Amino acid sequence: MDVRNLKVTSVFSGLVLLLFGQVAMADTDPQSREGTPTPIIAVCDGNETYSIALEVHNVRKSRGQITVDLHDDNPDGFLKRLGRIGRVRAPAEAEITNICIPIEHPGVYAIAIYHDKDMDGDFDKNFLGLPSEPYGISNDPAIFLSAPPHSAAAFEVLDLNTPVLATLKGK
Image (cartoon, rainbow, N blue to C red; front, side, top):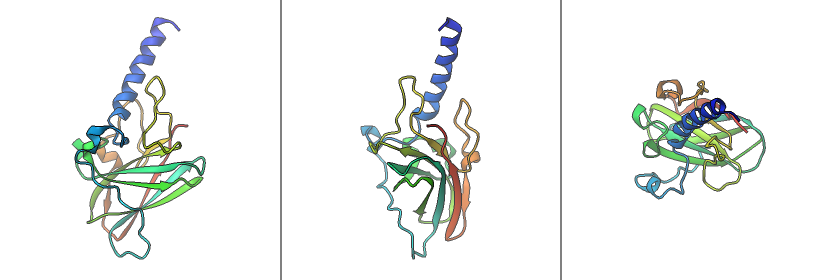
């Protein structure tokens, strides 16, 4: 590998780390436990409360779990541990995993997800810092060298059951 390729790889790895190093995806970091809400139980059937009906597409295998981090209408907290207002985990189901996320009130929200294939509670990355587990963002915004803005991932919950789509990217 020549120096030019090494620089490009280093820049790309740095940007991916910037993007996914801040994503609110790891329970094992002791600092993330401060101010982190208790995970939400993904049970909505029969409830007459506000909820998000999340459809996660491109789930390759029915193993592990899908971890969903819920963010509110705070662009500064989007994709950051302390900006997360809730977390849901559900068993992964091949092709499409449906997850119901109960919420307290209508408003603007955004979602970050990953497929925790080994169920270790971490968003795993390889030695270059690139994600080694599939990930996604609500509304499927383009992800290229930087995190998408909150506005691209945001959606409004007005009804008792609001449908939202996210497609997993990566291996």
